[in-house]
Amino acid sequence: MSALVVRFLLMDGIMKLVNPAPVVEGMTKLGYPLSLTSVIAIVLLVPVAVFAIPRTSVLGAILLTGYPGGAVASQLRVGLPWFSNVLAPVSIGVLIWGGLFLRDDRMRALIAVGSS
Image (tube, rainbow, N blue to C red):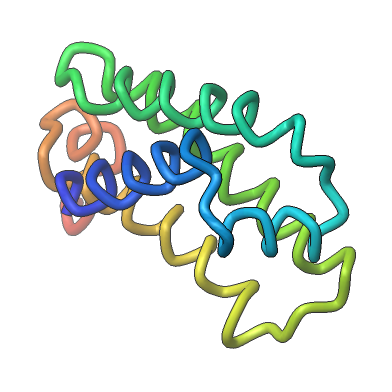
């Protein structure tokens, strides 16, 4: 699950560095200047790298939680549809923490699901 998240977010960050037409269209639709595309890419790629390293994965998950949160806020601000746009970043956040829960004993001990 974490590998899926890392691959998806790496692709997202790299696409923002390359700036193809869909990225330009999305940035324009959300009202962001194209000059911020590379900044947003770096703000994404650094926490992805931190998340991918097992020793720093919890810090990476905390930092990455802000990225889909910002996406939700941006999409709600411009009135994009809930099911096709707004819930996608929420699912990424769930996958970030779900993958961390499954791969990190510290998270499972902290949450302790099913123990009495």
